Length: 533
Image (cartoon, rainbow, N blue to C red):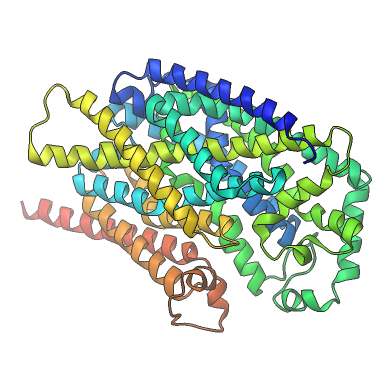
């Protein structure tokens, strides 16, 4: 940007609002109940915007937006899945049961609720441990997405941005709890909404309108398809930015099983999203929140997955190269596109500043929810159980737990910063689906079983969780090219279409099969015992 003044002014105003909302959260947080789930009286608008802002981070806009630049408009199907499954089914089916059972059992976190549903401390510990092991990877990816965007567009030192962004979020989460998180989420969601509409409208205006932009995108593939750089993609099933990859091809398997199913289905088993349902007063609140959230996701993802493919048209028009020819690191495509789009435009710095702020909000909102979830898992779910074993907790339990949750949050912030420095390139979208796949394969079947079964059995859930976790891990670390290739583990199957199949496609069905089998065996044993008596 030529001038940082617009960004500085916006940042000061945003920081002031964030501090104020964090202070309100702090004043309203007197015990662990309020730190973890507020007063269970959040409004529909706050819940919807907080859910949407947590769901759609910089990973969605920068990471998956970059993937849409590479693979095209097929990513719009991810938006459809996020609305139908990640929002409507999540609120109408899972959300209502989560709210009711959470309130009835007096649960304050996702692991706490799972433990109380199955009357099992080990299940509570397992879920908390899963959060503490897997969630820092996702949180670090969200942080890296925000840092990359800010450092590229306003030319600020990457380390300064990374530390500053982490500390700002850590401060209001640690002291303000879920109330500060959700109030700030709502503010940040509003800024994201405006910013994405602006960038979408300006993209269409620059490329000659909606029809002209998509006609140019279709024509571009006709010009580029025969070029050597796209040869491997064509061989792997790519058919252009406006078409679905060839059915069953390597790219089709990767896009459908990893990118589309990777987030759309996995959203149902995300602890940081489930806790939002527990803050609602009643089912009517969730019904209202559902439709507000659906509109929010439509605008944010619809914009991101449209400007991604169209960035190829823009870069080809200005530099005679497509986005993926210019940037081998897909995580940098959207930041570079926004910077170039407004270069030399009247009030361009103002628009860039608005979009940078929108991306800051996308990063901060998700990080806030993740820090809160990890801090709760460490301080409340793990530490409180350790205290229980060592001594019977007195009437000061709630205050002590509050302190433990705050300390746990602080520790996890440090861990996330360390993980962020270890992140390789092209990792944002991949890290997101890794965490979401891990949780879906491990706990989604048991979560659904616990919510909808009259007499859920802990042993059945444990078997399902173990099979889901182990099968997902084996496929992820030793078969899937995208994950094994990153961490460098030896692959037991090479040169096969199976290398492009996401671990979720293996882990989730096996977890479901294990649950059904274990439940059937348990029922037969129970019937046999009843007959013997």
